[in-house]
Length: 478
Image (tube, rainbow, N blue to C red):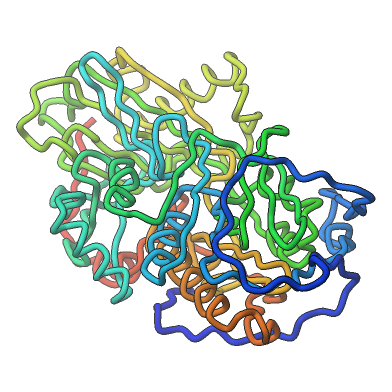
C-alpha cells in the first residue's frame, strides 16, 4: 500500500538518546545576539575530537559523538540549507514566511531543482524533461501551493493522453482525473522561479558543501576547504553517497544513521530527438504523449516532450525522454560522474531496442534519432521510507527534509520541506530550552516504499487499478 501523508500530520516528540556529547558553547554565556554575519572566516579548531567517521555501516555511524549546542538561539537565526531541490526550496520559502533567514547551497550548474531537471539543447532548441515528468496534488496544502503556481503561469495541467503501454504495443489510456501538472516551459523553470520574489533567502550555486563543522555554538560550512559561512542551524535536503559522506563525521550520529538506512534506486535517462514523428506503420503517429511501460526489461516510461510542452503547434524535431527500469539501471550501474563510452553505447542501444519492443515495432525499424544523450541518475528514487514528514535533532540543531521521508514524488518533497521549516521555526521560538520536545524522526523504522519505477503519483495509482479495465485500449499494428 502506498503511503500518503497530509500536512495536518502532527509531529510527535521522541526521547533523546543520551550518548557521548561534544558541547559547543562559549563561556561565560553571552546574552542573546543579533543575526551572525557570514564573515568568511575559517574557524581555528584546536584539540577537536575525531567524531569516529565511518561510512561502512550504520552501527559505526552511530558511534559518532553527539554534538550538543548550548549557546542561546539568537533573535534572528540563520539556517544553512544544503540542497536546492523541491524539499530544500520549500523549506527556505516557509522559513521566510516564519521570519527566518536562510542560505540555499546547490550543486546545480544550469539551475536549481535537483530532479526537476530540464535540458535545453541549442540551436533548435531541443527541450527535454529528463527527470521528474509530471506531478499530481492530493494534499490540500500542496494543492494550494500548486494553485499559486498556476496563477503565476509556472505550471499547467497536462491535457495530453498518458496511459500504460504493454510490451507489443497494447496501450490503455488513464483517466483524465486526477489532474496532472507540468511546468509550462519544463520542470526546472518552476524551481528557478520559486525564490524570485523572496528577500530573506540567499542562493549559492554551484556549490558542493563538503564539510560540516560545529564550533563556538554554530555550524561552519565549507567547500573543499573554502569557507561558505556559519549558521545557527542546518538542513540536509539531499541524499545518497554525498549526504552520507557529509554526515559521516558531522557529530550527528542519529541523523547520519537515519540517512544511511535510506535505500535508493538508479534510473537511466535517454534523451532522443527524431526528425519525424514516431509512427505506427500504416496508421500514423502514436496516440499518446506519455506512457508507463510494462513488460519491457529496459524501459519503464516514455514521453514526447515536444507534444507535452509545445502541443500541436510545433513543427520542429520530436524530443522524447525514455527512462529505464530500476532493474536495468542496477545491472548497468557505473559511477555517474564518469560513464564509460562503452557503457553509454550499450545502454542506449538496449533502451532503443526496448522502445521497439514496447511499441510492437519490428526490430531495427525505429527511425534513427539525430540527437541522443544518456544520463544516469545514480540516486534516483527511494525504495524505503520512515513515514514521517521530517527529521530534526534539537541537540545538534540539524534537520533533514526530502521526498523519501514520505514517498517518492514532488508533493512529498514539498510537504517535507514545509514541515521541517515550521518545526524549526517553532523550535527557534521556544529559545531551545526544551529540546526533548522537538526531537523528531531520529529513531523511526523504515518500511518498503512502492510505486512506479519513476515515482509515485498520489491519486493516480488507485485510479489505474480500479478504472483501467473499463478504458478503451489500442493495439498498435506491426
